[in-house]
Image 1: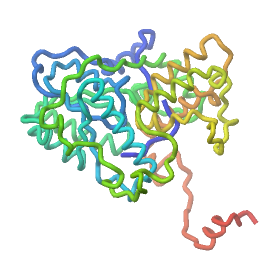
Image 2: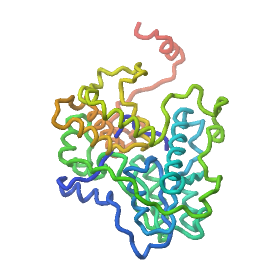
Image 3: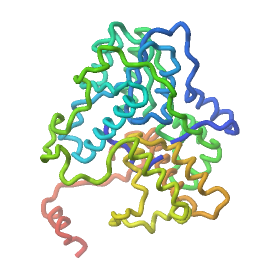
Image 4: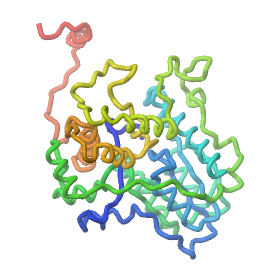
Length: 381
């Protein structure tokens, strides 16, 4: 879905990491091409990892020996005007267009945008190759997700693919650490405070380094190479009301996509004093020009930039210098993000109050008078 925790960043393996951590992260390193699989088609299913850099699934497909590589994104019609705001959806579409443009420019490939419920769309593709291939693919790869909706969806797709003889390869990349390995290291429980997360990070070892984008990528199949049927849609086509420009009016001011995200990250990493002195409590939510924060959150949420790349960039800037510390520092903000994902992956009913052991039961009620008082700031007296 289009919802996720909001503070951002990701990473890769260090030989000094504990053996248990090294074992759990093995699937992050793409394998060598299998000769028996050569000549078929590989599908790269983009979800949150909307980038070329540090994309293990894309690297895997590039090295698989496949004749064709299909970079796909599936737009679920459930997530539209009724569930997602126009600025958020526009950021997604801008990110998809940027990804498409980069694939075209760098590899003479393209992003293939399909529409429908993922299990239905992938069901057809895995069974027969329709509508892109003349036969089922030999490999499908994607970046792992940790949310309940995604876990259920991915388990069904994996089961179907395996029953059809289609190889499935998945990779960690949206978080600093493999959430399963991190939770196992912490006796199955997610930290609930910063000292616990800092201790866990030390036990897990340095996160893995980010991957470079593939040097080469096989072309998409002829049926999809030039078809406008698989282009990134417009906001209007998705049911949103837009102005003459076809964009939200006014625009939020932050262009979506890997290109814009990497430029913003690079600019922030050059500002050494900003990084060394950053203290979250001293930032202002009302500061817009320039903003007090990095404004990397949406780029990290959609995976336009790699959390691992940002993490290692921060560590390089801070090395050997006096700097702020977690929880106030930028590294602390990354750790808060990691903590949120660990909690979401381990606490039952994390997105609900009922049945959630981390939530205090509150007897919510509908009272029009109290609501009106709150709306007009007339509470507390």
